[in-house]
Length: 181
Image (cartoon, rainbow, N blue to C red; front, top):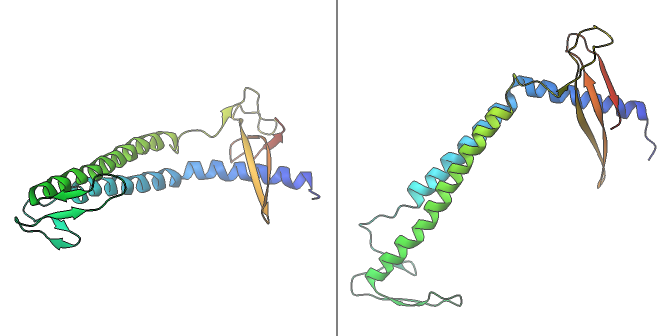
């Protein structure tokens, strides 16, 4: 595959520009917090609604509501089978709901932790890249920042990755350069 090095270098620089612009809009942060908030709500729903059984309802066996005199026969190749009374089926129902509570509260807790991390990491005020000690050759200010940036191009089932350390000045200045690591 013949590749024009100048075009790929410019594509990597453009990827860095877009990455910096996307970070400063705050849209990534908002999207992450909303998606993780929905995940936390689903987790709480699982724990508090699905994981809660109605204590007044009768247990079921093969889709039929049991009475106090009925028994339920469960066949299982994985253990846990046998014949169970009405009260034993209530106990089985209660214990199975505990799994949904653990899954629900676990998912909600994980979502809240990830929400806090993404809120801090995707702060729009957080500067893009690492500072460079040299002054910008165009505006002579010390506003240069650099970051390893990767640009991917997919052709068929093959993905080509081009990378370099991109150095950018402020958007007002517009200076950019790329070097290999």
